[in-house]
Length: 158
Image (cartoon, rainbow, N blue to C red; front, side):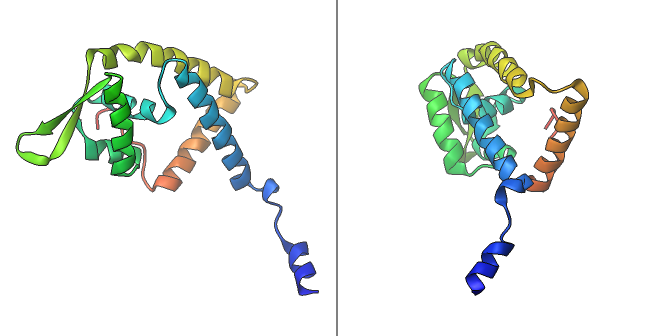
């Protein structure tokens, strides 16, 4: 009898924001992978490139911090980017444990292809929304990001 009473009081996960956010996140990640796969990249690699386009020559540890990812995860992404000649890794002269990551010429050139795919991705995820809804969504997602990360998004100069 207690089990039946417990079941009656269970929440309907499908009716929660967390459930919907999880489903939307999965669908978006799949779409990101499809779009970036068109140009030979994985979704996570894009975010490494975005950081390097802001500031080339970042330390590997700083990339990990900026992306809120573990060092091994970033290392794996960097290996993939090195293999396709988009970045290089160089040791820091005064610190043998640290490495800096630099874009190659191809890495700089790849920005045009990424921008093209990104604009298609952006439009596909916002289709059917009014301009007001797009602005509200952008604001709400920023608030959620800050709540999850515990920090404001860094500025372009960081």
